[in-house]
Picture 1 (cartoon, helix red, strand yellow):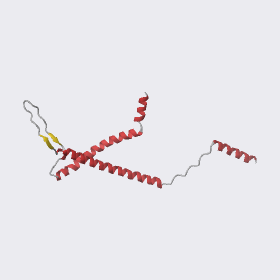
Picture 2: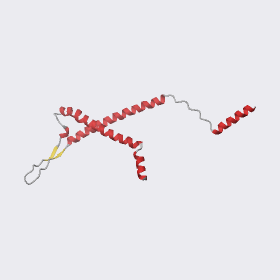
Picture 3: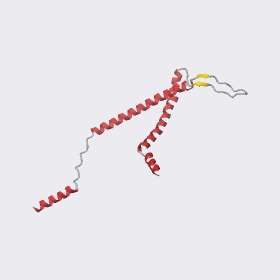
Picture 4: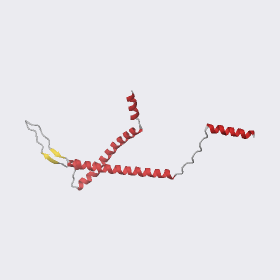
Length: 147
C-alpha cells in the first residue's frame, strides 16, 4: 500500500502533469510542423528542382529479384537518402519554431518581470502586538487612570 500511495503522490505532482501536457502538445505540434514541411514547403522546393519528391529519392544498392516458380520475390535494397533529407528539413523547421516560441515566451516573461519591478511595493503592514505586549499596554493604561 505504501508503494501505491507514493506512486499516487508522484503521479499527481504538478511537474509530472505539466510534463504530460507538454508531451501531448509537443506531439501535436510535431504533426503540424511535419504537415507544414510535407504539404506546404517541400512541393514548391521540389518543383524548383524539377518536380523532385525528396521522400522518394534513393540509390538502389541491390536490384529487386522477381519471383519464379521455385523462388520468392526479393525486394530491392535501397539507400533512402531523400527520406533523410526530408527528416533534416522537418527537424530544422521544428527547431526554428521551438526557438521562436521560447524566445517569445522569454520576452513576455521579461516584460512581466519589468512591470512587477516598476510597480510600487505595497506598504508593509505593522506587526500585530504579541500577547505580552497587549497585557503590558493594558497595565500601563490602568496605571495612567489611577494617577
